[in-house]
Amino acid sequence: MANHKATRKDVRQSEKRRDRNRYYGKTTRNAIRKLLAIADKTEAATEMPKVISMIDKLAKRNIIHKNKASNLKSGIAVAINKLA
Picture 1 (cartoon, rainbow, N blue to C red):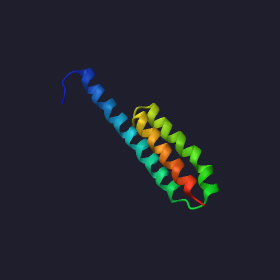
Picture 2: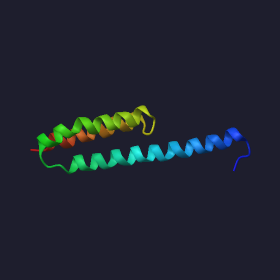
Picture 3: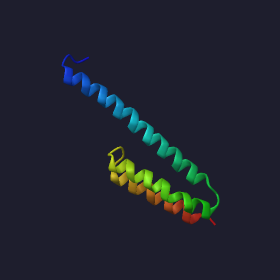
């Protein structure tokens, strides 16, 4: 453990950020799984903007890379368009 007061504070802050980022990431992954499990195209299409927004927020916060976000959104769009 660090001895400087500022370094101790930085450790506390990074732990908080890590927990928050893990929460946002896990919540988004679960939302993606739920969306891909939907069999009805209209229902999936109404849920898609919410999930896309969650993914964009992860990319904005640098929790995931912007290209990863783009790939996720593309995959979701392809999966929903395949639904009958």
